Amino acid sequence: MAIDSLAVERRQNLSPRERELSLAGALLALALPSGVPLLLRAIPAAWLLHRAATGRCVLLETTGLRTAADVRPDLQLRYGEGTRDLVDQASWESFPASDPPAW
Image (cartoon, rainbow, N blue to C red):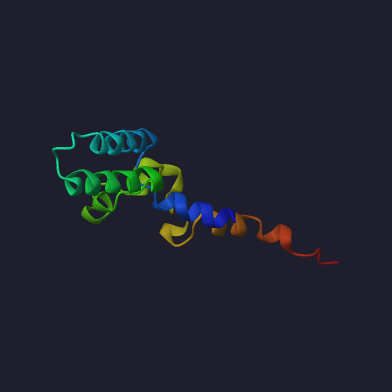
C-alpha cells in the first residue's frame, strides 16, 4: 500500500498552494454570471477541479515545465543513477542483515 501512495506522490507536480488556488479558480469559474454559457464555465471548472483533486497538471507535465521532482525533490530517483528508487535503495542497504549468519 505504501508503494502505491509513493507512486501517486511521484506523479503530483503541483504544490499544495497551487492545488488550493485551482480549487478557488474552479469555484470562481462556476460562480460566473449566468449570461456566460455553461460550457465556458464548466470546462475550465472541471479542469481546475481535476488539478486540485489529483495534484497533477498534465499540461505542465507534457510541456516539461514542471515535474514532480521540482515540487518534491525528496521523490527523485537519485540512487543508482536513476535506476533504483527509495525502496530499492533501502533493500540494497539492508541486504547483509537479511542473510542468516554463516556458522
